[in-house]
Length: 78
Image (cartoon, rainbow, N blue to C red; front, side, top):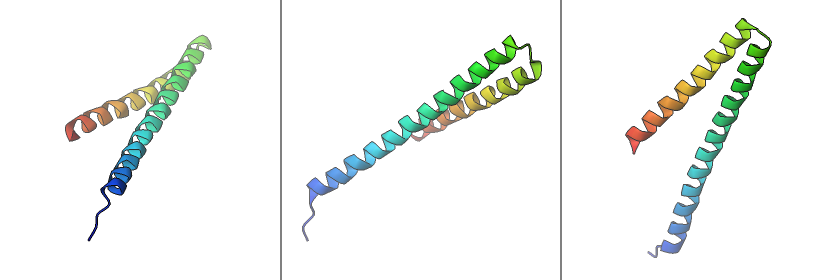
């Protein structure tokens, strides 16, 4: 049986690219959400709207908590 190592290396390379592309995509989405929430917090402060300020601040804290958890779990995997 003949194994095409060139094809195996190509498949491995493509799989690695896919994983890295997904990681970049997820980081971009998280950064976008964080920036969006920071703008909403600033707007709530400008509008002197404490309810909106606390709502968006809590959402931002949640986003950052998820990021921290993902960093810890990914560090422990590898």
